[in-house]
Length: 373
Image (cartoon, rainbow, N blue to C red):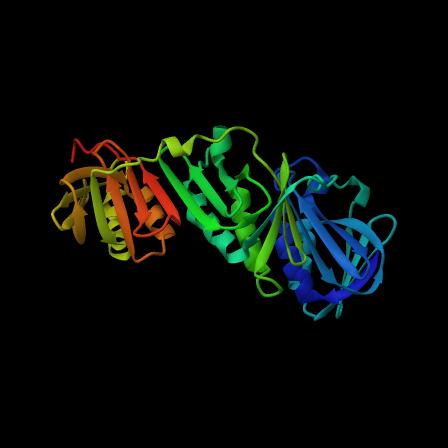
């Protein structure tokens, strides 16, 4: 194997595929990156068995071949080299030589046939075409609500529902739920669950490939066990989480006795300030007192207390209710709208947050007891 290429292009591509390099494995090949030269391109692939990332760049003076390079060391070498052009070669014993200006590195690689077998989706898989930016925003709007407890199975993932003209993402951790909905083009209805960790990595990949993206859309192909995302010269293969997701629609309240219309930014800033004291107390608790046209947020601890007033429009009775401040903050940061609607029924039932118009998002947050406040 032999080629020359732009050091900057190689470094950017390495940054993309390195996101899939396994850091906790006893398999040496999974700590590396497969490099294959074929048809004037360098194809780099990394995998941790849950996610596989493949990226391609154009190269010159190419001689076909393949080798597995040590990911961290090779990446560090490429980033620290000073020249604009880099020359790389590997012999039959997998010894890799990296030349750039006056630098000459010799690294020990691994035979390419020791790399994992990468499987694409089946021939009868479903295709989804989606705007890159819409996908990224939907993941950002939901992933924070997925469980981080790896023993929780399916709720560590984001449920992705496809129908003929819509895509819906749902995340839940037992205390809160986030739902995002957007138009999409799909061949058929389908439900899949993808790890929230993997979905967040995809968002980073889409940001990294933004400059060279030739189209605003991307394609996702889904079968029973995996999903393949393709955008430009980058391909991501994701293993799906098996199992049945929580029947989230049964949790959403269909009626609300109390509706509060509030400016999201003002509420977010007030909750953020109140949380300074809630962090010092137990349960990260804040109290919301809804009276007429004012929502009063209070929090207290041994360090002191705080009171914040936010102007609102209210329909229904007055209400006192408590929440975990972090859950409220995470939710409000995920919303871009100026105005939101908070729907309540009682101090012991969830708060449902929706837009004033449409169904682009729904957020559900369970209350916390406030008997001692």
